[in-house]
Length: 314
Image (tube, rainbow, N blue to C red; front, top):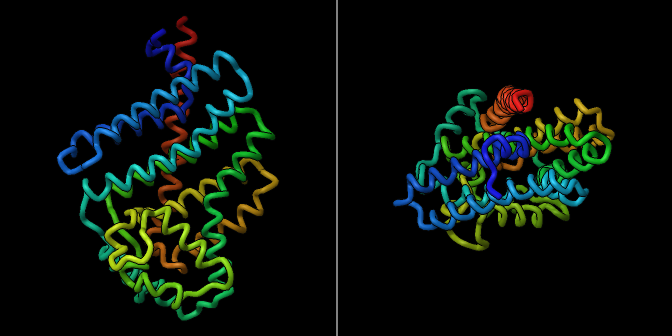
């Protein structure tokens, strides 16, 4: 049975709303710039399918109220940001084919008088590199640690709030990638192929770097990796989302907050030390974190207020 707008709104969470809205935005961009994008029909179909799946999950969770369906409805938040991230790989460069690394290099030099990644290289040590690379890689675990503890200890509305802020934060950072694409200092200020020699670790660094490179669609052993890497530098999503996780962890007084703080602090230092980001990217990440909570709270309040008004009119 088809759902009308009121029924749909009653089923969806703010996370569902912003996810479907962002998928619609990406589909609209794909259609507008279809002449530049080879795979635009597939992307539009995927977005339509994912949007429909969100509605189906929301409806099933509301109707059945089983732990499995409620869990599926809540935890789709993790795979969807990964899916959209890979979709951006096919969209950002065709839509905005200019890289802005020279701008970010100039800003960093204006602030410090030197390139921060080159200056930090003077103090590099394999043990430091190993610790920071592990912390940088832990980014992919921070959300799980936070989400699992909130999901197990608190009412579902607290998990909904945290999941919304995190996923909404990702979407805002993705808009930044469209606006100011860049590849980062490991390509512009350093020789990418020499990083394992110039910035060696101890045991895991090289393997973790290879996994991260694969996640950013960089083929191995090619002469021109800069042509393949994802344009995902500004803002530093690692900084923005780590700060969001830390804010939520301390707001909820989670048992894991000190572990998250330790990993997150090292991770943010590692964004520049490991040559993934410019310093201005980190600053932008902090600004985008503030923007996420400011606008995110407004969206949540508006969504809840709209639901209350509709329920009172029934």
